[in-house]
Amino acid sequence: MLPIRTSNLDRVQKELDAVIADVAARYSLARSSTDMNLVLDVDLLTSAKNENPVWYVQYAHSRMCAVKRNAAEMGIDKGSAEDFKPELLTHERESALLAALAEFPRVVAQAANMREVHKVAHYLESLAKQYHGFYTDCRILPMGDEAATDLNRSRMWLAEATQIVLRNGLDLLGVSAPERM
Image: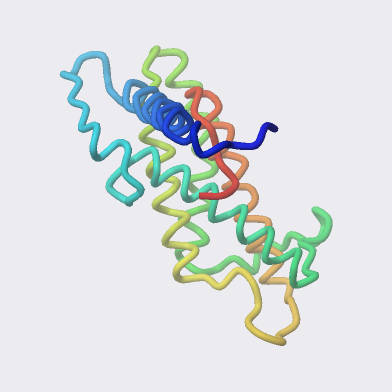
């Protein structure tokens, strides 16, 4: 990586703006049905707020990466697959997220068969919404000096499964899944 000189900042900013616009445009095209008029709000699509669909989905992925980093800093490991105890996931948000994850293969198959890629984008937005609700209502990591429980580890497995599905879905659309935002 080359150091950025002050004289190059304008050029670097223009290149960053072009990359951001490309991601926003790519996602916007993917989320639009071919039988509808395409309306692009460039200001919205380049903003960092929940109303921006690509930002919202990417932020959900980034948030899950932050949970994994925080868990590592706390010395918490989700353990092996045998440590996943789905019977502990009884909160309605957990159930809704599990159900949404189960839909991914069907959505991808349907999108491919019908050549309607927008179905994947809309699914990802819905999944991100499910995850944000889960994150708000279901504490994934223990607080303070609390020890990690089987419930914490199971929620970590659920969060990681969601992260993988979001990353795979964004990859299908040709859009990045950033680890930090």
